Image 1: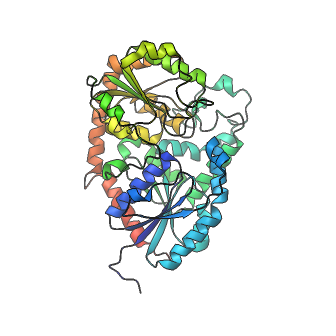
Image 2: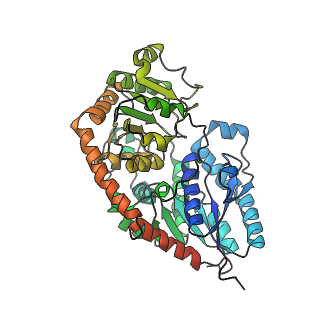
Image 3: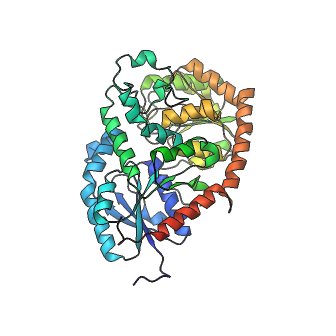
Amino acid sequence: MDDPGKALRVILFPLPFQGHINPMIQLANILHSRGFTISIIHTHFNSPDPSKYPHLTFHLIPDGLSEDQESKFDVLRLLHLLNANCIGPFRECLEKLMSAHDDIACIITDALLFCSKDVAQDLGIHRIVLRTSSVCSFLAFATVPLLQGKGYYSNNNLDSRREDPVLELPPLRVKDIPSIQRRNPNDALKILRNTVEATKAASGLIFNTFPDLEEPNHPNLHEHFRIPTFLVGPFHKFFSSASSSLLTQDRSAITWLDTQKPDSVLYVSFGSLVKMDEKNLIEMAWGLANSMQPFLWAVRPGLVQGSEWLESLPIEFLEVTGKRGYIVKWAPQQEVLSHPSVGGFWTHSGWNSVLESICEGVPMICSSFLGDQMVNSRYLNDVWKLGIKLENGFEKEEIESAIRKLMLDREGQEIRERLVCLKEKMDVSLKTDGFSSRSLNALSDLISSFKSSSGF
C-alpha cells in the first residue's frame, strides 16, 4: 500500500534544444518546490549538467545521433531522428524507473517528442505535454490540416501570395504560416501533425505563458484540445534557478552595459538554433551601424552558414561602430534584458526570448526564421503591439528605420507604456490568487490524482 505521506515522483523528458531544455528545467524546479520528486530522462545530445541541479535526478539515454548529424544541426532532421531513435531507450529507461519506484505519478514530455505517446500508453502511465511555444502559435499548428486541405501548402505561386491574409487564422499572412517558407514542407507537416495528434492523446497540456497576453486564443484551445490545459507562466518568474544554458555566457557583456546610458542600448540575439547567410549578416551590421545607436550583439558561433564567427563582418563596420558596439558569442540574456542600459531587443521571436523581454518591459524588433517564430512576430506587431516586425527580412534601410523608431521615436515609447501595463497584469497573475498561480495549483492537483499503476 502506498505511503500517503510519500512525495510523488514526476518524470520529465525534454527535447534537447536550448529553448526547450530551459523551460523544462524551470518547470522541474517549480514542481520540486511544490513537493514532487523529479527525475529527468535526457539524451546524450545537448545533455544538461546534473551538477547544477543536485535536487533533481538525471537518467541518460542513447539517442543514436552521429557526430555529423549533431554538427549539421538540421532542426527538422534532428526532430525526426530523435523521435525515431529514442523510442526504445526511452521505453527501457521508463520501465526501469517504474520497476524501481512505486511513487511515479506521471511523465511530462516536450510536445515535439511525440514518440513518447505510444510508450506511455503501452506502459499505462499518464502523460502530460509541455508546449514551449505561445498558445497562438500552437493553434496555428493545429490548423495545419485545414490549411493543407485548402491548398496553402501545394500552391506553386506562394511567393506572389506571401502578403495575403490567411482568413482562417487572423492576423496571419501566408508568409507567417508554420513551414510555408520551405520549398518542400512535407517533412515539417508530418512533424506538426504528429505533434498535434500526440498532444490530443495526452492527459494534460502545459503552456509557459499567461492569459492576459494570450486572450482571446486561450478559450479557442478547447476547440482543438479537449484535455485539461494549464497556463502556468512565465516559468522563470516563479522560481529563480541556476542557468541551464548550453553555451558559455560572456559576462563581459554586463561590464560593458555598466558603462552605457540608461535605455540607450539595443540588445541583439537570435537564439541558439537560427542559421542565416552572410548577406543577411552584413545587412544587419550596416543597419546597426547606420542607426547610430549603441548595441550589444550576441553572434553565436555557427550563426552564419560556412563561417566560424565574425570573419564575415566587414572591417569598415567594426571601424565605424568602434566602442558604440560590443559583440560577444553568447550573453546572460535575462540579466542583459533586466539591465537599466538596455532599451530595446532585436530578437528572432523565439518564445523564451519574447517572455523574458515582456517580463523586463523591453520593446522588441522582431525577425523570424522557423517554427513558431513567424506567428509570434506577427502577434507582437499586429495584435499585442509590443514590437516592430521587419516585414522584408534583412534590408539595412528597414533595419535602421526600425531601430530609430524603437529607441528614439514615440512609437517605441508607446510600446514601453503598453509593456508596463502588461507587466502589471503578469505580476497579478503570479500572485497567490492570480491565474497562473491557480493554474499551477490545478496542475499540481491533477498530478497528485494520478497513480502510475492505474492506466487509462
